[in-house]
Image 1 (spheres, one colour):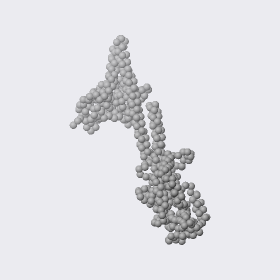
Image 2 (spheres, rainbow, N blue to C red):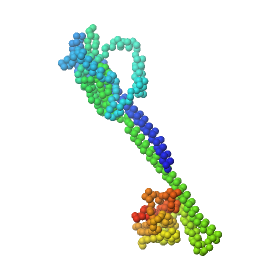
Image 3 (cartoon, rainbow, N blue to C red):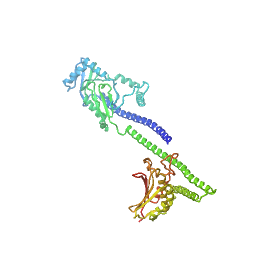
Image 4 (cartoon, one colour):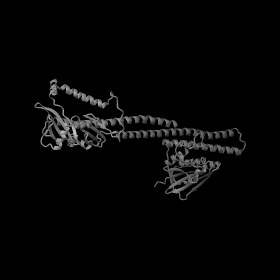
Length: 539
Protein backbone atom coordinates (compact mmCIF):
# COMPACT_ATOMS: atom_id res chain seq x y z
CA UNK A 1 0.00 0.00 0.00
CA UNK A 2 2.89 2.33 0.67
CA UNK A 3 4.07 2.00 -2.93
CA UNK A 4 0.56 2.71 -4.15
CA UNK A 5 0.39 5.85 -2.00
CA UNK A 6 3.73 7.06 -3.36
CA UNK A 7 2.59 6.31 -6.90
CA UNK A 8 -0.63 8.29 -6.48
CA UNK A 9 1.29 11.14 -4.82
CA UNK A 10 3.61 11.32 -7.82
CA UNK A 11 0.60 11.13 -10.16
CA UNK A 12 -1.11 13.95 -8.25
CA UNK A 13 2.00 16.13 -8.53
CA UNK A 14 2.27 15.31 -12.23
CA UNK A 15 -1.29 16.59 -12.67
CA UNK A 16 -1.20 19.56 -10.30
CA UNK A 17 2.07 21.15 -11.48
CA UNK A 18 1.14 21.41 -15.20
CA UNK A 19 -2.38 22.44 -14.22
CA UNK A 20 -1.04 25.26 -12.04
CA UNK A 21 1.26 26.42 -14.83
CA UNK A 22 -1.62 26.25 -17.32
CA UNK A 23 -3.84 28.20 -14.93
CA UNK A 24 -1.18 30.87 -14.52
CA UNK A 25 -0.68 31.24 -18.27
CA UNK A 26 -4.42 31.21 -18.98
CA UNK A 27 -5.12 33.85 -16.33
CA UNK A 28 -2.34 36.05 -17.69
CA UNK A 29 -3.63 35.63 -21.24
CA UNK A 30 -7.17 36.52 -20.20
CA UNK A 31 -5.97 39.55 -18.24
CA UNK A 32 -3.85 40.71 -21.18
CA UNK A 33 -6.73 40.30 -23.62
CA UNK A 34 -9.00 42.14 -21.23
CA UNK A 35 -6.55 45.02 -20.85
CA UNK A 36 -6.01 45.24 -24.59
CA UNK A 37 -9.73 45.37 -25.33
CA UNK A 38 -10.44 47.90 -22.61
CA UNK A 39 -7.53 50.05 -23.81
CA UNK A 40 -8.82 49.82 -27.38
CA UNK A 41 -12.21 51.11 -26.24
CA UNK A 42 -10.54 53.94 -24.31
CA UNK A 43 -8.41 54.92 -27.31
CA UNK A 44 -11.48 54.98 -29.53
CA UNK A 45 -13.16 57.31 -27.03
CA UNK A 46 -10.16 59.64 -27.02
CA UNK A 47 -9.87 59.45 -30.82
CA UNK A 48 -13.49 60.58 -31.06
CA UNK A 49 -12.68 63.56 -28.84
CA UNK A 50 -9.63 64.43 -30.94
CA UNK A 51 -11.74 64.20 -34.08
CA UNK A 52 -14.35 66.55 -32.60
CA UNK A 53 -11.64 69.05 -31.58
CA UNK A 54 -10.01 68.89 -35.03
CA UNK A 55 -13.35 69.63 -36.69
CA UNK A 56 -13.89 72.55 -34.30
CA UNK A 57 -10.47 74.05 -35.06
CA UNK A 58 -11.00 73.67 -38.81
CA UNK A 59 -14.48 75.23 -38.93
CA UNK A 60 -15.01 78.83 -40.02
CA UNK A 61 -16.19 81.42 -37.47
CA UNK A 62 -19.93 81.44 -37.15
CA UNK A 63 -22.09 79.19 -35.07
CA UNK A 64 -19.71 78.43 -32.23
CA UNK A 65 -20.38 75.71 -29.67
CA UNK A 66 -21.47 76.66 -26.17
CA UNK A 67 -17.96 76.36 -24.78
CA UNK A 68 -16.67 79.27 -26.91
CA UNK A 69 -16.90 82.39 -24.75
CA UNK A 70 -15.67 84.89 -27.37
CA UNK A 71 -13.45 85.45 -30.39
CA UNK A 72 -10.88 88.22 -30.48
CA UNK A 73 -8.17 89.78 -32.67
CA UNK A 74 -4.80 91.19 -31.58
CA UNK A 75 -3.26 93.69 -34.00
CA UNK A 76 0.40 94.37 -34.51
CA UNK A 77 0.45 96.95 -31.68
CA UNK A 78 -0.94 94.45 -29.17
CA UNK A 79 -4.43 96.00 -29.00
CA UNK A 80 -7.23 93.52 -28.47
CA UNK A 81 -10.41 93.90 -30.44
CA UNK A 82 -13.26 91.46 -30.24
CA UNK A 83 -16.73 90.72 -31.27
CA UNK A 84 -19.49 92.13 -29.07
CA UNK A 85 -20.06 90.35 -25.79
CA UNK A 86 -16.46 90.17 -24.54
CA UNK A 87 -16.56 91.17 -20.87
CA UNK A 88 -13.86 93.17 -19.15
CA UNK A 89 -12.35 90.31 -17.06
CA UNK A 90 -12.00 88.18 -20.17
CA UNK A 91 -10.44 91.02 -22.12
CA UNK A 92 -7.96 91.69 -19.33
CA UNK A 93 -7.10 88.00 -19.23
CA UNK A 94 -6.53 87.98 -22.98
CA UNK A 95 -4.26 91.03 -22.84
CA UNK A 96 -2.35 89.53 -19.95
CA UNK A 97 -1.99 86.18 -21.68
CA UNK A 98 -1.01 87.62 -25.04
CA UNK A 99 1.14 90.47 -23.85
CA UNK A 100 2.81 89.15 -20.71
CA UNK A 101 5.90 87.09 -21.38
CA UNK A 102 6.16 86.24 -17.71
CA UNK A 103 2.68 84.75 -17.68
CA UNK A 104 3.42 82.82 -20.86
CA UNK A 105 6.65 81.47 -19.38
CA UNK A 106 4.84 80.46 -16.19
CA UNK A 107 2.22 78.55 -18.12
CA UNK A 108 4.93 76.93 -20.24
CA UNK A 109 6.75 75.91 -17.09
CA UNK A 110 3.61 74.31 -15.74
CA UNK A 111 3.08 72.50 -19.03
CA UNK A 112 6.65 71.22 -19.03
CA UNK A 113 6.03 69.47 -15.69
CA UNK A 114 3.57 67.15 -17.46
CA UNK A 115 5.65 64.14 -18.52
CA UNK A 116 3.06 62.77 -20.95
CA UNK A 117 3.46 63.78 -24.57
CA UNK A 118 0.58 65.55 -26.33
CA UNK A 119 -1.76 63.30 -28.26
CA UNK A 120 -0.92 60.15 -26.25
CA UNK A 121 -2.87 57.82 -23.96
CA UNK A 122 -1.50 56.01 -20.92
CA UNK A 123 -3.07 53.60 -18.45
CA UNK A 124 -3.15 54.59 -14.79
CA UNK A 125 -2.63 51.57 -12.53
CA UNK A 126 -4.51 51.58 -9.24
CA UNK A 127 -1.66 51.12 -6.79
CA UNK A 128 -4.00 49.74 -4.16
CA UNK A 129 -5.20 46.92 -6.41
CA UNK A 130 -2.51 46.26 -8.98
CA UNK A 131 1.11 45.13 -8.56
CA UNK A 132 4.00 47.45 -9.25
CA UNK A 133 4.82 48.06 -12.88
CA UNK A 134 7.38 45.66 -14.34
CA UNK A 135 10.87 46.76 -15.19
CA UNK A 136 11.06 48.66 -18.49
CA UNK A 137 11.85 46.53 -21.49
CA UNK A 138 14.74 47.11 -23.78
CA UNK A 139 14.24 49.49 -26.66
CA UNK A 140 14.16 46.60 -29.13
CA UNK A 141 11.40 44.75 -27.22
CA UNK A 142 7.79 45.57 -27.99
CA UNK A 143 4.58 43.79 -27.20
CA UNK A 144 2.53 42.15 -29.92
CA UNK A 145 -0.28 44.66 -29.39
CA UNK A 146 2.09 47.66 -29.73
CA UNK A 147 3.62 46.14 -32.85
CA UNK A 148 0.20 45.65 -34.45
CA UNK A 149 -0.79 49.22 -33.64
CA UNK A 150 2.43 50.60 -35.10
CA UNK A 151 2.10 48.55 -38.25
CA UNK A 152 -1.52 49.56 -38.61
CA UNK A 153 -0.72 53.29 -38.29
CA UNK A 154 2.20 52.95 -40.68
CA UNK A 155 0.03 51.23 -43.27
CA UNK A 156 -2.65 53.90 -43.03
CA UNK A 157 -0.09 56.67 -43.35
CA UNK A 158 1.59 55.05 -46.36
CA UNK A 159 -1.78 54.54 -48.03
CA UNK A 160 -2.70 58.17 -47.43
CA UNK A 161 0.64 59.43 -48.75
CA UNK A 162 0.41 57.22 -51.83
CA UNK A 163 -3.02 58.53 -52.70
CA UNK A 164 -1.97 62.20 -52.54
CA UNK A 165 -0.68 63.83 -55.69
CA UNK A 166 2.72 65.57 -55.38
CA UNK A 167 1.39 68.94 -56.67
CA UNK A 168 -1.56 68.75 -54.27
CA UNK A 169 0.81 68.14 -51.36
CA UNK A 170 2.95 71.11 -52.40
CA UNK A 171 -0.11 73.32 -52.64
CA UNK A 172 -1.20 72.34 -49.15
CA UNK A 173 2.20 73.13 -47.73
CA UNK A 174 2.28 76.57 -49.35
CA UNK A 175 -1.28 77.54 -48.47
CA UNK A 176 -1.51 76.03 -44.98
CA UNK A 177 -2.02 78.68 -42.27
CA UNK A 178 0.08 78.74 -39.17
CA UNK A 179 -1.05 76.08 -36.67
CA UNK A 180 -3.16 77.28 -33.80
CA UNK A 181 -1.56 77.38 -30.36
CA UNK A 182 -3.26 77.39 -27.01
CA UNK A 183 -2.71 77.70 -23.28
CA UNK A 184 -4.73 78.09 -20.12
CA UNK A 185 -4.87 81.50 -18.53
CA UNK A 186 -6.79 80.56 -15.39
CA UNK A 187 -8.47 77.45 -14.00
CA UNK A 188 -11.61 78.07 -16.06
CA UNK A 189 -10.42 79.43 -19.43
CA UNK A 190 -8.27 78.34 -22.32
CA UNK A 191 -7.09 80.72 -25.08
CA UNK A 192 -6.41 79.53 -28.63
CA UNK A 193 -4.49 81.87 -30.98
CA UNK A 194 -3.25 81.78 -34.58
CA UNK A 195 -1.07 84.26 -36.55
CA UNK A 196 -2.50 85.29 -39.91
CA UNK A 197 -1.63 87.85 -42.56
CA UNK A 198 -4.51 90.12 -43.46
CA UNK A 199 -4.14 93.05 -45.86
CA UNK A 200 -0.37 92.97 -45.60
CA UNK A 201 -0.54 93.26 -41.80
CA UNK A 202 0.15 90.55 -39.27
CA UNK A 203 -2.71 89.82 -36.86
CA UNK A 204 -3.43 87.17 -34.25
CA UNK A 205 -6.90 85.70 -34.14
CA UNK A 206 -7.96 83.98 -30.96
CA UNK A 207 -10.76 82.10 -29.20
CA UNK A 208 -11.63 82.04 -25.50
CA UNK A 209 -12.82 78.60 -24.39
CA UNK A 210 -14.59 77.66 -21.16
CA UNK A 211 -12.76 74.53 -19.95
CA UNK A 212 -15.76 73.08 -18.07
CA UNK A 213 -18.15 73.52 -20.96
CA UNK A 214 -15.56 72.09 -23.31
CA UNK A 215 -15.33 68.99 -21.12
CA UNK A 216 -19.11 68.58 -21.16
CA UNK A 217 -19.14 68.98 -24.93
CA UNK A 218 -16.38 66.40 -25.40
CA UNK A 219 -18.14 64.01 -23.05
CA UNK A 220 -21.30 64.34 -25.11
CA UNK A 221 -19.39 63.86 -28.39
CA UNK A 222 -17.62 60.70 -27.20
CA UNK A 223 -20.14 59.04 -24.89
CA UNK A 224 -23.52 60.53 -25.69
CA UNK A 225 -24.41 58.34 -28.65
CA UNK A 226 -24.32 54.84 -27.15
CA UNK A 227 -24.60 52.93 -23.89
CA UNK A 228 -20.92 53.35 -23.05
CA UNK A 229 -21.69 56.37 -20.89
CA UNK A 230 -23.24 54.13 -18.22
CA UNK A 231 -19.90 52.33 -17.75
CA UNK A 232 -17.52 55.25 -18.28
CA UNK A 233 -16.64 58.31 -16.27
CA UNK A 234 -14.64 61.26 -17.62
CA UNK A 235 -12.74 63.95 -15.75
CA UNK A 236 -10.88 66.86 -17.37
CA UNK A 237 -8.00 68.82 -15.87
CA UNK A 238 -5.45 71.51 -16.74
CA UNK A 239 -2.10 72.44 -15.18
CA UNK A 240 -3.94 75.16 -13.22
CA UNK A 241 -6.86 72.97 -12.16
CA UNK A 242 -5.93 69.32 -11.49
CA UNK A 243 -8.87 66.91 -11.26
CA UNK A 244 -9.33 63.88 -9.07
CA UNK A 245 -8.93 60.48 -10.72
CA UNK A 246 -12.35 58.86 -11.28
CA UNK A 247 -12.93 55.39 -9.85
CA UNK A 248 -13.12 52.44 -12.21
CA UNK A 249 -11.70 49.02 -13.05
CA UNK A 250 -9.48 50.53 -15.74
CA UNK A 251 -8.30 54.16 -15.74
CA UNK A 252 -6.63 55.84 -18.71
CA UNK A 253 -5.21 59.33 -19.13
CA UNK A 254 -5.05 61.17 -22.45
CA UNK A 255 -3.24 64.41 -23.14
CA UNK A 256 -4.79 66.13 -26.12
CA UNK A 257 -2.76 67.25 -29.10
CA UNK A 258 -1.98 70.91 -29.75
CA UNK A 259 -3.55 73.42 -29.44
CA UNK A 260 -5.33 71.65 -26.53
CA UNK A 261 -2.13 70.24 -24.99
CA UNK A 262 -2.96 71.90 -21.65
CA UNK A 263 -6.11 69.79 -21.44
CA UNK A 264 -5.93 66.26 -20.01
CA UNK A 265 -8.77 63.76 -19.82
CA UNK A 266 -8.98 60.79 -17.48
CA UNK A 267 -11.35 58.00 -18.44
CA UNK A 268 -12.46 55.39 -15.91
CA UNK A 269 -13.99 52.30 -17.53
CA UNK A 270 -15.93 49.66 -15.68
CA UNK A 271 -15.63 46.07 -16.84
CA UNK A 272 -17.36 45.95 -20.20
CA UNK A 273 -19.85 43.09 -20.67
CA UNK A 274 -18.77 40.29 -22.94
CA UNK A 275 -15.06 40.76 -22.29
CA UNK A 276 -14.99 38.27 -19.41
CA UNK A 277 -12.12 38.07 -16.99
CA UNK A 278 -9.81 35.77 -15.11
CA UNK A 279 -12.54 34.83 -12.63
CA UNK A 280 -14.12 32.28 -14.96
CA UNK A 281 -10.66 30.81 -15.64
CA UNK A 282 -10.12 30.39 -11.92
CA UNK A 283 -13.61 28.96 -11.51
CA UNK A 284 -13.15 26.40 -14.27
CA UNK A 285 -9.68 25.58 -12.95
CA UNK A 286 -11.04 25.00 -9.46
CA UNK A 287 -13.78 22.77 -10.90
CA UNK A 288 -11.19 20.89 -12.95
CA UNK A 289 -8.90 20.55 -9.94
CA UNK A 290 -11.75 19.26 -7.78
CA UNK A 291 -12.75 16.81 -10.51
CA UNK A 292 -9.18 15.59 -10.85
CA UNK A 293 -8.84 15.34 -7.07
CA UNK A 294 -12.09 13.40 -6.74
CA UNK A 295 -11.03 11.18 -9.62
CA UNK A 296 -7.68 10.48 -7.98
CA UNK A 297 -9.33 9.81 -4.63
CA UNK A 298 -11.87 7.49 -6.24
CA UNK A 299 -9.16 5.73 -8.25
CA UNK A 300 -6.99 5.41 -5.15
CA UNK A 301 -9.94 4.05 -3.23
CA UNK A 302 -10.71 1.52 -5.94
CA UNK A 303 -7.08 0.43 -6.24
CA UNK A 304 -6.58 0.24 -2.48
CA UNK A 305 -9.78 -1.78 -2.06
CA UNK A 306 -8.76 -4.11 -4.88
CA UNK A 307 -5.27 -4.53 -3.44
CA UNK A 308 -6.63 -5.06 0.06
CA UNK A 309 -9.16 -7.57 -1.26
CA UNK A 310 -6.45 -9.38 -3.20
CA UNK A 311 -4.30 -9.45 -0.06
CA UNK A 312 -7.23 -10.85 1.89
CA UNK A 313 -7.76 -13.52 -0.75
CA UNK A 314 -4.10 -14.41 -0.54
CA UNK A 315 -4.34 -14.62 3.24
CA UNK A 316 -7.51 -16.67 2.82
CA UNK A 317 -5.70 -19.18 0.64
CA UNK A 318 -2.93 -19.43 3.22
CA UNK A 319 -5.49 -19.76 6.03
CA UNK A 320 -7.52 -22.39 4.19
CA UNK A 321 -4.36 -24.33 3.45
CA UNK A 322 -3.46 -24.24 7.11
CA UNK A 323 -6.99 -25.09 8.26
CA UNK A 324 -7.15 -28.01 5.83
CA UNK A 325 -3.71 -29.28 6.68
CA UNK A 326 -4.31 -29.36 10.45
CA UNK A 327 -7.30 -31.77 10.52
CA UNK A 328 -5.87 -33.85 7.69
CA UNK A 329 -2.62 -34.25 9.59
CA UNK A 330 -4.51 -35.34 12.73
CA UNK A 331 -6.71 -37.74 10.77
CA UNK A 332 -3.71 -39.25 9.02
CA UNK A 333 -1.75 -39.60 12.25
CA UNK A 334 -4.58 -41.31 14.16
CA UNK A 335 -5.45 -43.45 11.16
CA UNK A 336 -1.87 -44.70 10.71
CA UNK A 337 -1.59 -45.50 14.40
CA UNK A 338 -4.80 -47.51 14.26
CA UNK A 339 -3.77 -49.20 11.03
CA UNK A 340 -0.39 -50.29 12.36
CA UNK A 341 -1.89 -51.65 15.63
CA UNK A 342 0.16 -49.34 17.79
CA UNK A 343 -2.84 -48.54 20.01
CA UNK A 344 -3.33 -51.49 22.33
CA UNK A 345 -6.20 -50.40 24.58
CA UNK A 346 -9.80 -50.11 23.47
CA UNK A 347 -10.21 -46.81 25.31
CA UNK A 348 -7.37 -45.23 23.31
CA UNK A 349 -8.77 -46.58 20.07
CA UNK A 350 -12.19 -45.13 20.92
CA UNK A 351 -10.55 -41.76 21.72
CA UNK A 352 -8.69 -41.77 18.38
CA UNK A 353 -11.91 -42.62 16.56
CA UNK A 354 -13.59 -39.62 18.23
CA UNK A 355 -10.68 -37.36 17.18
CA UNK A 356 -10.88 -38.61 13.60
CA UNK A 357 -14.64 -38.01 13.55
CA UNK A 358 -14.32 -34.50 15.07
CA UNK A 359 -11.55 -33.48 12.68
CA UNK A 360 -13.56 -34.86 9.75
CA UNK A 361 -16.58 -32.78 10.82
CA UNK A 362 -14.34 -29.74 11.17
CA UNK A 363 -12.97 -30.37 7.70
CA UNK A 364 -16.46 -30.75 6.31
CA UNK A 365 -17.62 -27.48 7.89
CA UNK A 366 -14.62 -25.66 6.42
CA UNK A 367 -15.26 -27.05 2.94
CA UNK A 368 -18.98 -26.31 3.23
CA UNK A 369 -18.20 -22.71 4.21
CA UNK A 370 -15.99 -22.23 1.17
CA UNK A 371 -18.52 -23.81 -1.18
CA UNK A 372 -21.44 -21.90 0.32
CA UNK A 373 -19.65 -18.58 0.01
CA UNK A 374 -18.65 -19.34 -3.57
CA UNK A 375 -22.29 -20.04 -4.43
CA UNK A 376 -23.43 -16.87 -2.66
CA UNK A 377 -20.82 -14.77 -4.43
CA UNK A 378 -21.82 -16.17 -7.82
CA UNK A 379 -25.55 -15.82 -7.04
CA UNK A 380 -26.25 -19.49 -7.62
CA UNK A 381 -27.22 -20.32 -4.03
CA UNK A 382 -30.86 -21.45 -4.08
CA UNK A 383 -32.90 -20.86 -0.92
CA UNK A 384 -35.98 -22.89 -0.03
CA UNK A 385 -37.62 -20.81 2.69
CA UNK A 386 -40.12 -22.35 5.06
CA UNK A 387 -42.25 -20.86 7.80
CA UNK A 388 -41.66 -22.78 11.00
CA UNK A 389 -40.59 -22.40 14.64
CA UNK A 390 -36.94 -21.53 15.08
CA UNK A 391 -36.30 -23.19 18.48
CA UNK A 392 -36.16 -26.83 17.21
CA UNK A 393 -33.46 -25.92 14.68
CA UNK A 394 -31.49 -24.08 17.38
CA UNK A 395 -31.67 -27.10 19.70
CA UNK A 396 -30.52 -29.36 16.87
CA UNK A 397 -27.53 -27.11 16.21
CA UNK A 398 -26.55 -27.04 19.88
CA UNK A 399 -26.72 -30.83 20.15
CA UNK A 400 -24.47 -31.22 17.12
CA UNK A 401 -21.79 -28.80 18.43
CA UNK A 402 -21.95 -29.82 22.09
CA UNK A 403 -19.27 -32.57 21.82
CA UNK A 404 -16.92 -30.01 20.29
CA UNK A 405 -17.73 -27.50 23.04
CA UNK A 406 -17.23 -30.09 25.75
CA UNK A 407 -13.84 -30.99 24.31
CA UNK A 408 -12.83 -27.32 24.41
CA UNK A 409 -14.23 -26.85 27.93
CA UNK A 410 -17.03 -24.44 26.95
CA UNK A 411 -20.48 -24.12 28.44
CA UNK A 412 -23.35 -23.24 26.08
CA UNK A 413 -26.41 -21.61 27.63
CA UNK A 414 -29.64 -21.47 25.62
CA UNK A 415 -32.33 -19.01 26.74
CA UNK A 416 -35.57 -18.74 24.74
CA UNK A 417 -38.78 -16.77 25.25
CA UNK A 418 -41.91 -18.84 25.54
CA UNK A 419 -43.96 -16.99 22.91
CA UNK A 420 -41.65 -17.09 19.90
CA UNK A 421 -43.55 -16.62 16.63
CA UNK A 422 -42.75 -18.71 13.55
CA UNK A 423 -40.22 -17.19 11.13
CA UNK A 424 -39.12 -17.65 7.53
CA UNK A 425 -35.77 -19.43 7.12
CA UNK A 426 -34.00 -22.34 5.49
CA UNK A 427 -33.03 -25.13 7.87
CA UNK A 428 -29.60 -25.96 6.41
CA UNK A 429 -28.67 -22.28 6.05
CA UNK A 430 -29.73 -21.51 9.64
CA UNK A 431 -27.79 -24.53 10.95
CA UNK A 432 -24.66 -23.35 9.15
CA UNK A 433 -25.14 -19.82 10.50
CA UNK A 434 -25.39 -21.13 14.07
CA UNK A 435 -22.39 -23.43 13.61
CA UNK A 436 -20.26 -20.53 12.38
CA UNK A 437 -21.32 -18.19 15.19
CA UNK A 438 -20.65 -20.74 17.92
CA UNK A 439 -17.34 -21.76 16.33
CA UNK A 440 -16.37 -18.10 16.06
CA UNK A 441 -17.18 -17.58 19.75
CA UNK A 442 -15.00 -20.55 20.70
CA UNK A 443 -12.04 -19.35 18.63
CA UNK A 444 -12.04 -15.75 19.87
CA UNK A 445 -12.88 -16.17 23.54
CA UNK A 446 -9.19 -16.26 24.34
CA UNK A 447 -8.49 -16.03 28.06
CA UNK A 448 -12.06 -14.97 28.88
CA UNK A 449 -14.76 -17.02 30.54
CA UNK A 450 -15.52 -20.13 28.49
CA UNK A 451 -19.22 -19.46 28.37
CA UNK A 452 -21.40 -18.87 25.32
CA UNK A 453 -24.93 -17.53 25.60
CA UNK A 454 -27.48 -18.21 22.85
CA UNK A 455 -30.70 -16.27 23.35
CA UNK A 456 -33.92 -16.31 21.35
CA UNK A 457 -36.34 -13.42 21.82
CA UNK A 458 -39.48 -12.10 20.22
CA UNK A 459 -39.03 -8.87 18.25
CA UNK A 460 -42.57 -7.85 17.29
CA UNK A 461 -43.63 -10.42 14.73
CA UNK A 462 -40.00 -11.44 14.07
CA UNK A 463 -37.48 -13.57 15.93
CA UNK A 464 -34.15 -12.29 17.20
CA UNK A 465 -31.25 -14.73 17.80
CA UNK A 466 -28.29 -13.46 19.87
CA UNK A 467 -24.99 -15.33 20.19
CA UNK A 468 -22.56 -13.86 22.69
CA UNK A 469 -19.14 -14.86 23.96
CA UNK A 470 -17.25 -13.54 26.99
CA UNK A 471 -13.91 -12.88 25.38
CA UNK A 472 -12.05 -9.59 24.87
CA UNK A 473 -14.40 -8.38 22.13
CA UNK A 474 -13.45 -6.79 18.81
CA UNK A 475 -11.19 -3.70 18.68
CA UNK A 476 -13.06 -0.58 17.60
CA UNK A 477 -11.00 -0.14 14.40
CA UNK A 478 -12.01 -3.64 13.22
CA UNK A 479 -15.64 -3.64 14.34
CA UNK A 480 -17.00 -2.19 11.09
CA UNK A 481 -15.16 -4.80 8.96
CA UNK A 482 -15.79 -8.10 10.74
CA UNK A 483 -18.54 -9.10 8.29
CA UNK A 484 -16.37 -8.44 5.23
CA UNK A 485 -15.05 -11.52 3.39
CA UNK A 486 -11.47 -12.60 4.13
CA UNK A 487 -11.10 -9.86 6.76
CA UNK A 488 -9.04 -10.66 9.82
CA UNK A 489 -7.99 -8.21 12.52
CA UNK A 490 -4.68 -9.99 13.05
CA UNK A 491 -1.84 -10.25 10.56
CA UNK A 492 -1.77 -13.59 8.81
CA UNK A 493 1.82 -14.37 9.83
CA UNK A 494 1.42 -13.44 13.49
CA UNK A 495 -2.20 -14.35 14.25
CA UNK A 496 -2.92 -16.53 17.27
CA UNK A 497 -6.46 -17.63 16.43
CA UNK A 498 -7.62 -20.17 13.88
CA UNK A 499 -9.98 -19.43 11.02
CA UNK A 500 -10.18 -18.27 7.42
CA UNK A 501 -11.91 -14.91 7.80
CA UNK A 502 -14.93 -16.29 5.98
CA UNK A 503 -17.26 -17.36 8.78
CA UNK A 504 -18.97 -14.05 9.62
CA UNK A 505 -19.09 -13.04 5.92
CA UNK A 506 -20.93 -16.28 5.22
CA UNK A 507 -23.26 -15.60 8.17
CA UNK A 508 -24.24 -12.24 6.77
CA UNK A 509 -24.65 -13.61 3.23
CA UNK A 510 -26.90 -16.49 4.34
CA UNK A 511 -29.01 -14.35 6.72
CA UNK A 512 -29.57 -11.67 4.08
CA UNK A 513 -30.35 -14.41 1.56
CA UNK A 514 -33.12 -15.54 3.90
CA UNK A 515 -34.50 -11.99 4.12
CA UNK A 516 -33.09 -11.22 7.57
CA UNK A 517 -30.42 -8.86 8.86
CA UNK A 518 -27.36 -9.26 11.08
CA UNK A 519 -25.25 -6.88 13.17
CA UNK A 520 -22.43 -7.18 15.67
CA UNK A 521 -21.32 -5.16 18.65
CA UNK A 522 -19.20 -5.40 21.76
CA UNK A 523 -21.17 -6.23 24.91
CA UNK A 524 -21.43 -3.59 27.61
CA UNK A 525 -19.55 -5.80 30.09
CA UNK A 526 -17.18 -7.45 27.60
CA UNK A 527 -17.39 -10.01 24.86
CA UNK A 528 -18.67 -9.88 21.31
CA UNK A 529 -22.35 -10.19 20.46
CA UNK A 530 -23.93 -11.05 17.11
CA UNK A 531 -27.66 -10.45 16.62
CA UNK A 532 -29.70 -12.09 13.84
CA UNK A 533 -33.23 -10.92 13.02
CA UNK A 534 -35.32 -13.33 10.99
CA UNK A 535 -38.37 -12.03 9.19
CA UNK A 536 -41.81 -12.98 10.38
CA UNK A 537 -44.04 -15.35 8.50
CA UNK A 538 -45.56 -13.89 5.35
CA UNK A 539 -49.21 -12.87 5.83
